[in-house]
Length: 288
Image (cartoon, rainbow, N blue to C red; front, side):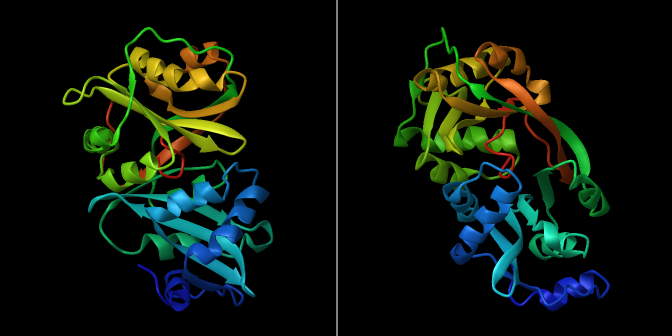
């Protein structure tokens, strides 16, 4: 997707001078620099979170004298849809067109829908690049105080992964088989329904100083909350985060578990690829 791209990015920007900053493909060698950038912004992403994103992504690193000062990753999920994530520029290098440069270099010119969760600060740039708001997420966080479920649920095995991937892909709008394979290596996955009749699932993994649950795919809010509670039961007294779609109806139930809405941000998209109605919570804001 990207090779020697500094001149290409500058051309797309109408000749804006990036001040000697080099743009190059994002590799494992840039992970620690990416972690430092996200930590400076107060993000909870650790190296494992960056590595999970990179495992299903290609992207761009902006380097100043060998130091990472900007990043963007693009994660392709089939031929029609990608997410754009880890869009970061070091504070001292903002206002020079670098954010747009790394975005345009990572996005490329392929005809595909692009989806992202925007910060309020980044929203004007994304609108200039043709993104429109298609939804909103609420970041629910807190220490788990209660987690009860009355539905019969079970934990996933390797034999369930193909069916989980099919549910996830249908709800997301793109091919998520590789993403589910990566997730299975670092997450506990709870299921609603027997093999051959899977009706919902949710995944829980370590994140920041606690855990995150997502995605949550279920036929209704009651089932979604049951899946979350099943995964949250061992986490009582520990921090948990769930990024829920605002229309999903999960917020009152999560509040009873001890989580509160920390902030709300827009889901933005360029191109037409819909999100399924049974998608109740995101895998992450970066990978949606």
